[in-house]
Image 1 (cartoon, rainbow, N blue to C red):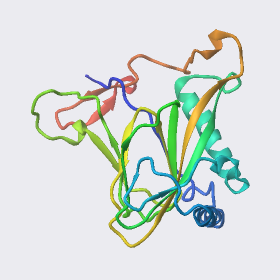
Image 2 (image 1 turned 135 degrees about the horizontal axis):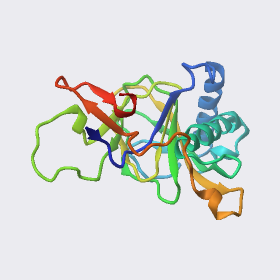
Image 3 (image 1 turned 180 degrees about the vertical axis):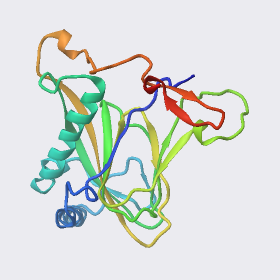
Amino acid sequence: MIRLLFPYVCIEDNLLETGQLDQEYIDLLKNEIDSMRKKDPVGRKISNQYTGWQSNDGCESSPIFTKLIRMINHKFNTELLNWTGHNSNQVQLNISNSWANINDKGAWNAPHLHNGCWYSGVFYVKSDGDEGNFVAVDTDSKVVSDFPHSPREQQNYRLAPKTGHLFLFPSALMHMVEPNQTDKDRYSISFNMNTSYLSKNINDRTGVPRDYHPDELCFEVDNNGKLTHKLST
């Protein structure tokens, strides 16, 4: 039996491809980011490297971003809280701060964490998938000796995002963005989420996932390496 221990729980979706957002609205987001950069061409320097531009916090306070922010909050308060087993009437996640990014040719983002929040995420406003991967890095060494390579023993995960892609991840997940080798600018919005408790009862802060089983991350593996979920056998 294979048992997965301590996985990073991430949420992934493409809001454009699934029809949750349309291209007209995404174009409005891009135009707003262009306007933000025109007003503040210097921006700020945190993880962004070379000529990459990053805005100051405040996207969440702009009316243009309201629809997207509301959708991201809903995604967290349904999918993530369903996973953890929390009641959204007692515990909620809301975006505490958000900022815009433009990565032009040569721009990249150094490895970093998002301290001071529970979850973080990024939404891609304009991306063709070839402007540098988002890379999640596993900093918790599982093996302390040499071992044969296998995709099931990977130490990083590369995402080639397309327009509309939403990726939500725990704040302690080390990540970076590879250099943009194209002549195209990639636009994205990053954000942090914090928890608010709607009930003063401490017992309401404990998640009780529906149908939780301690073996739900266990798999049987056959001689060909095919995995079968243990609870389905």
